[in-house]
Image 1 (cartoon, rainbow, N blue to C red):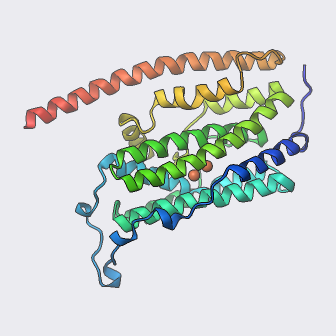
Image 2: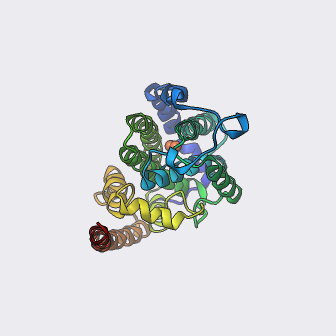
Image 3: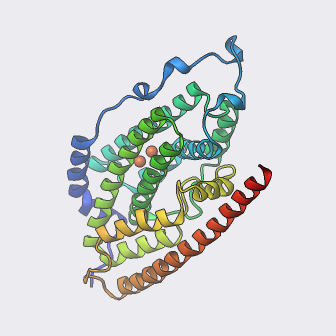
Length: 316
Ligand SMILES: [Fe+2]
Ligand SMILES: [Fe+2]
């Protein structure tokens, strides 16, 4: 059985892994510029500068594309909250400190590029967008739980980065605009590299303190909500995105949770003590329930979509 390590001891032990993976990240990350992804020639002035203010007819995005874009952008805008969590729970020194700064700067680029696109193309109401940003950033909250310590934070961001990758990529697909799709593929590629950094560090935590790490992972997974939690209309918009396959329960299970657990070999390991074994049993029960919930959700969604189709046909 492994002994319990403090937060500081874990960070110190994992510093060489952080350094190695920071260097790996820097060698893989592509430098890109938000301005290269924006169709500037579509832009024109708003009323305050002698032009025309936003009207819904100006947007070429469907309702679901607008909602997904806004949800993803507000999540990116809420970066100061995430930065605070990560910088409080990772060390400020050495490779840890460099990673936190670099990751924050890369994330900021995502909010810049998505906002530029939406304002230039008039995809969404810029006034409503600004109001939602003010509310969401003022609240600052992103999760119903406060993740405590390095292990819970690194487990949470592993799943969160992968979830945002899926969400950005699928949003690009529903925009029906190759410019938006290219931009969101670029953002999704960044999220994937972030996920790999955190997943590797969490794996190193599992090797170092298996029981402590698995308890953190299970706590995070059984309480997981998407980062948009707390933003205006989060429930309604989350339901809309799930209904249209941008981020639904099957994607959460099959594209986010399962591949990460497989990468960590959670169900093949034999280095857990009694606490780790108990956590693994809780995890197995959670996964079983999740699989059943996926089926239930899809049955409901199919019924709902069939009803909507029937109603549309009746109106024709
Ligand atoms: Fe991001
Ligand atoms: Fe990211």
